[in-house]
Image (cartoon, rainbow, N blue to C red):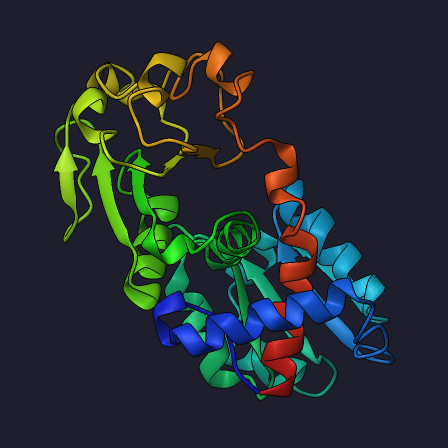
Length: 276
């Protein structure tokens, strides 16, 4: 069994194996893999996409999901003792929590896999799903040039993890002081978008709006990129903030269906972690 905490714990072969499992799940395989198994899901009440796709994915694999608020893991009891008891009853644990070190500690203490459903420093399932979608609509997405527009947060850092594992080119456009270490940085979107094939964005805190005034993604900006460029804003995105209203209505926007494989990819991650 294998946990998923960071994409950099995997190699490209692991990622392509998850893609292959996703194809098989779309063909109707593994519908009983979780039969008579219980999956614990620690998730905040505000979660929409993560919770819907994981809970439905568990159901479609024949399993039982048991949902806890994320804050349940912050109580006084030592996490080693929590895990000691969970080893008796749970078959898989999925955690969305700000502290990745808590997930690492849980993975060390549990005899079952832990899947990272988002932390403050990465979001591996989200980026895996995006890469799977790209693998279906691009000839070879590894050869595409990626631009991340946003601050040094969990989405940008997750894309950096993915670029390190898969070997694709990734650069960043951001205000000064929001840089991701190790990436080529632009402070102006008109310079950054030249030659790019995939533009990924993340929402901004209100305090950063002024710092990112030269990084706003519009339809005119997307026209400066390579032919067939795709805009992939990480939800929740906010029209008029990191992206303009009209660019979301344009042909550049990957659309809501860009995320439709999140369900199957997260099922594939569960299958992979339980069978490897």
